[in-house]
Each structure stands twice: as structure tokens, then as C-alpha cells.
Amino acid sequence: MTKLREQTVSNGLLVSALFFDDFIVDSHLAFKQDCVACCVAKGEEAVAANDYEGTIALCSAAIGLDSSGDCSLFAHRSREKLSGTLYEEAIIDAEK
Figure 1 (cartoon, rainbow, N blue to C red):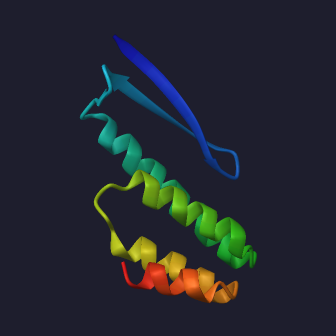
Figure 2: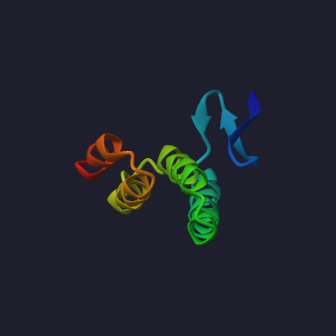
């Protein structure tokens, strides 16, 4: 049975995932990568607007979508947490 699940990740960004008996369809990987790229692009817009909370939320969404463990996403989120004076959280991200 094929199911469509949707989840709002941040700033109203709606992510849809196609599941086949709880197994992500392989072709869905490209969709997830597009969503990560969208989160990163929107995060850069949030940085330009000095919206640290929005940037952190978008980085978190990208990290949630990217199962490869891309450490650049953690580094970016850590930098934004430093800018928002969230020092302890920034250190945790920097160590990942």
C-alpha cells in the first residue's frame, strides 16, 4: 500500500514523502535532496535578514532530511547559534 505523508518542517515549508509499506521509494532520494537544498537556500535568506531563529530552524530541517550526516549543515547551524548567543548548543553542533 502506498501512503503519502506530509510534514511541516519550518517557516511553513511542507515536505511530502512517498512511502511504500514504510519503505522510502529510492527515487524519493532526489526529492529529499531538493528539500535540503531548499532549506539551505531559505536559510541563507534568513541569514541575510538577521533571522537567526529562522536560520537555525531551517538548518535543523535540512539535518533532519539529510541522512548522510553532512557536517557542513551542523557547522552552519553552530555558527548561527553562536550569532544568537546559544553558546552551549553551538558547541554541541560544532562537535558533530
